[in-house]
Image 1: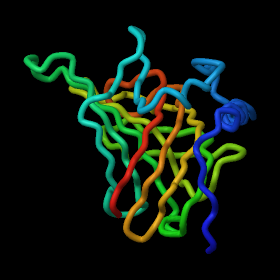
Image 2 (image 1 turned 135 degrees about the vertical axis):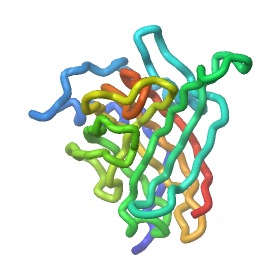
Image 3 (image 1 turned 60 degrees about the vertical axis):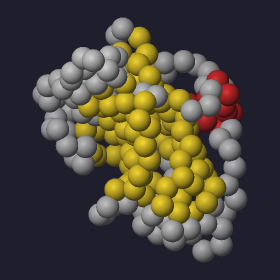
Length: 207
């Protein structure tokens, strides 16, 4: 397969993706958190989740890794720890991208994200059902944001709408390097579920 050109996320394209994701009979009822996402371009590295009290940033202990097994999954994570002297007050957040195995190692590529992710009421992030929307790149099998803490396990399924763009600037048999710019609206998967997330993260991961 010949390599496709990779480029930085375009604010106009991302806005279009969010508009597409909000259309259709299966659209979630929650409105976008912000009508403009142009600030994503200039915000640098961002990973935050919104709660009733406001935004929570996950700037500590950032990590990026490929999970073993199938489907191949890229996980980008961060931690929020309000006090280093208080036990069990931490909250973690991860965004997971599940790939069709054929796209990995095929060269640079820009992929669109648009769909709904439903997490079953369990303590595992593997039980996710993803329904793509118009414009979603089929090379991505699922995308979702999950949070974790010492709270209780959800008692019902949690649904989030996701839209954005994934740029793989390097996509070889040994390494994947690029940038994910994403917004989710709706309940994040896992414990201490938030009401949405904003992600703008670069990564460089060995396969």
